[in-house]
Length: 606
Ligand code: SER
Picture 1 (cartoon, helix red, strand yellow):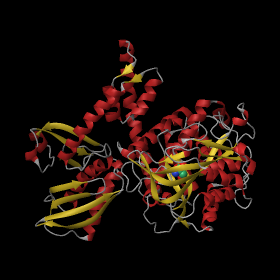
Picture 2 (tube, helix red, strand yellow; picture 1 turned 180 degrees about the horizontal axis):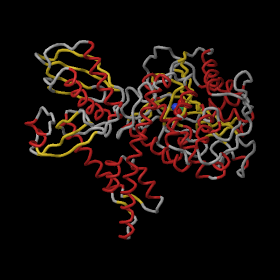
Picture 3 (spheres, protein in one colour; picture 1 turned 90 degrees about the horizontal axis):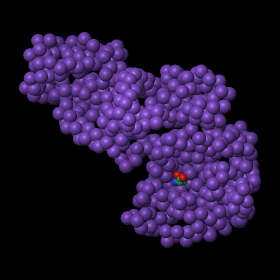
Picture 4 (spheres, protein in one colour; picture 1 turned 180 degrees about the vertical axis):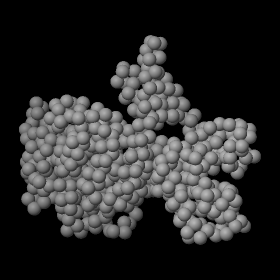
């Protein structure tokens, strides 16, 4: 059930809310700091920035921040742990968090008083005071009940019947098992205006739909280490206000999807659907699908378009991105929205947010490219994968089993790129489940085998990035032989996710024109969208067919030969992309000497 937010009548959009918030705190001595990347820089333990405090952990732990002890920001956040919940009225995978911070400066009284002023003063958000309720920490973990916050709220005029005391589960905030933490006071908006059947007990914490949390002020004075709650050297404040929820409250709409942060995206997608908005609203499955495709598009655009943006792949953040894109494309099908139209709607997202996040416009080409390529890959995979899965399901039915084997699920993942969650959802629709344990076991075996394979092929790893680079080295090799002459042979290569290095025989430095010609040759081959195919043959056959291959003594007598259109034919163990268009933009960064008679090219793709 949707909540019925009623009170707000403000015409306010995301740009205005962000700037009001930053202005309010800047006027109170806070330095405005930019949003950190949504892909954390120095924290391999998590894939995404999940809260405003996340990039600030070192400073909450005691390090001095260069901008001072009072900070304010709007942080891009991604949370995908509750991806299945997306589609209700409040869960989002991408959201913006407004946050103000005291690093050992002010504490409870100032923090609460400013939150109250910002929310209720007519000069700022002007939310009616009687629509606000709060919760305070009831005590626990050796930390006392938060009488101080309670007294501040009382002094501001919040009546007892609108103040709840709640325990560790509700009013204690921590990033994880270790690190900075503390009690918090949470601020709620009353969407109904009267108690539910619980009467006076209907306060924040009541499980009815009356209360929407909009702001959380955490008093981070502690750190948890090895299960112990210790005092931090300084008492900090970390507040977080969800921009989308606050917009919903202010503009009096029922869900975040009706706020100005979503509405243009939602409308653009409805326009491409075979259903009308009224039909979608009248059908819960369609409404859920519409929310999923809108949410996932926004999140995908922010992940790819980030300053540390990533591409869809089979691991880490790239894998989450792949899941989001593929899940959205499936739900597009439910709505009768062509996947190309969903991809094209990224422009609406960029238009909506480019003001606050200019990196989206700067990376617009990359966003379009990655979404397009992932759609093409998924399309191909779907056609073959679904056929395979239907056959598996027929076999299961014939055998009277209700469980798809881990092996089959793994094959769908490995060969056809079906995210496991996707397979689970697909088979569940027909009343089947997946042997997850068997799947995990095959997955672990595969990871080990991949490491060995990567080591053999000169790739640092088998990520999609490295594989794209690998195919690019074949094109570069062919380009050099075409432009400089057939005396060029590969002398070595080294590939990581960020760049490639290619050594080749050539007696003199290349001229600028030669470098440009080679670069253009490779780009033309990429843009020609050539298929990359492999064939297994004897070494003899390979040599006779004209395949080049430098390390022939390393190969067994049966070899595999990779062809790129009819431009390149090389002995190689793979792996490679399926089509050159997956490579993107190719650029030679440097041409230099490697050793006598050997030149070295460093190149990057984007
Ligand atoms: N860290 C708290 C949260 O994420 C407040 O910013 O809710």
